[in-house]
Image 1 (cartoon, rainbow, N blue to C red):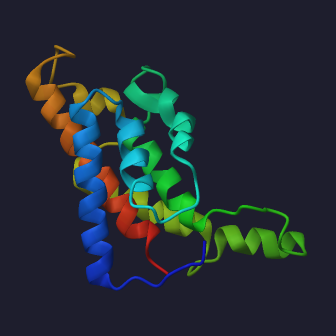
Image 2 (cartoon, rainbow, N blue to C red):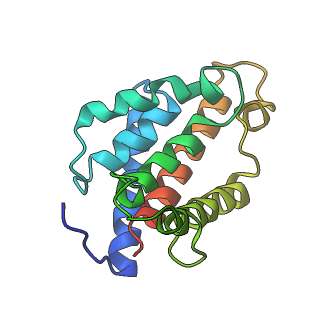
Length: 166
């Protein structure tokens, strides 16, 4: 697909739509990572098929239910990569160019993803599922589910906004 330039208003509207999609999927029992990626894919902005969501299914519950990196946070990284990742890591002719593509402070893949991580950390306070869910002893409590839905929607919103930046 051809890259499109999105205005700040378009990015914000699409980010809200992705967040709403993600929240609706959470309501229907999808895990946190599936919600974030599926919510974004449904915007129709990439050529990835819907089945791509399978790539994140094991990330839920903090990487396979271990409580480590939150699946919603992790899936947000894939949202950004879907727009700015390297489909062919060997497309650059030299090793130096390939490394610059990753690290360049203004256009690099790593700084773009790091900005997402910092934004999410600022918004939700932690990156680990166990920390985010610690206040909720009962995994099935309505309070924990509300908290996770909020996190899912926040990650979908931030990731989509950042994915659509030039």
